[in-house]
Length: 114
Image 1 (cartoon, rainbow, N blue to C red):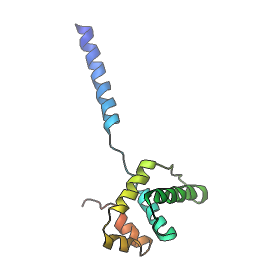
Image 2 (image 1 turned 120 degrees about the horizontal axis):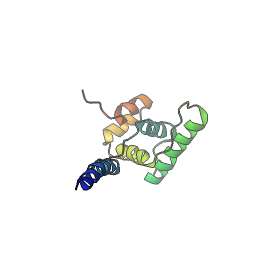
Image 3 (image 1 turned 90 degrees about the horizontal axis):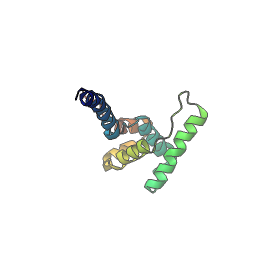
């Protein structure tokens, strides 16, 4: 009986930790919001979501190959999250995003709770 209790006490935290990591939500990288702004500002608004993803991938790869000290590995989930955030903007916010990098970042970056 003591052996079963010990096994349960050992397995319970292991199972709890495994469940936590399995169901943990994806953490969005805010770097991708800035990359969306680069796509909008430098390349113009893409025609489709696939084109948007391709251009966003190009921006990340270009940044890594040229000037970045800390390389950013391309994360498809973060890219999709940033694209979806842009697609959900209303017309006024999209117009503001097209007015330059600073305006775009003000619209795209998530608001910090005060």
